[in-house]
Image (cartoon, rainbow, N blue to C red; front, top):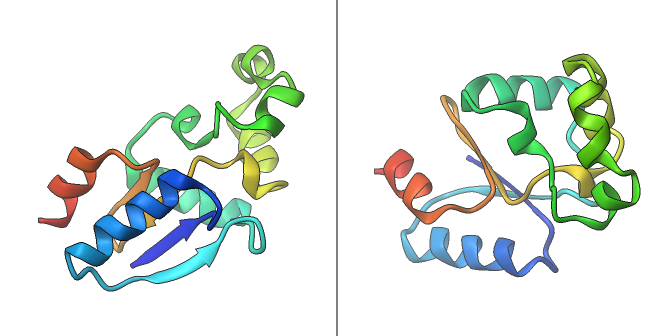
Length: 116
């Protein structure tokens, strides 16, 4: 499994402790140092079955600075993927990526049901 996170993010730290407490094996990737590519984001989005908006860090500074709340609805899916791939801080974190799933953000109940 791949755990994509920002080490300074308290939610990411909480999710990592949660994984460790359950003995889940994973590889860590710092989203600020190694931004997900457009191809990775497309694959993860497909695996997630979630709306693309769930992959945006809507509470992040970059999201707010770019005024994406108002711009996203008018953007095509291709434009949104391209934008997400420009800056890891735009991407919702943490991301837990498995062979058959992708979970953006840490929702304990969601993670618990997938990792059972």
